[in-house]
Amino acid sequence: MAKVIFTSDLQRFTGGAREVEVAAGSYQQLVAELQQRFPALTDTIIGRYGLAIDGAIIQTPLLERFGNDSELVFVTRIAGG
Image 1 (cartoon, helix red, strand yellow):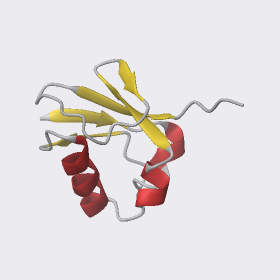
Image 2 (cartoon, rainbow, N blue to C red; image 1 turned 60 degrees about the vertical axis):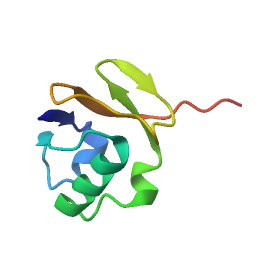
Image 3 (cartoon, rainbow, N blue to C red; image 1 turned 180 degrees about the horizontal axis):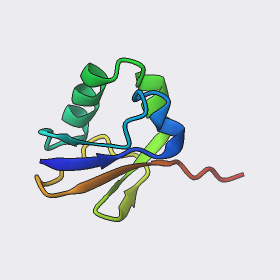
């Protein structure tokens, strides 16, 4: 199972959970599974973050896939000005 690590700013929406294992294999499945476990993780909140998959940061991960042994971390999107 893939491991999701929550940064401290997301832990307030996960009831304090720092990490969880998920059965998902794609970003869309991941979001659905996390929202089922943690209803406070709305699309608006998750949409503020990119996703690091095994250390590679994807700013818009909508179609990304990952393996059962992947490590996933939601990261704040970088904005330019």
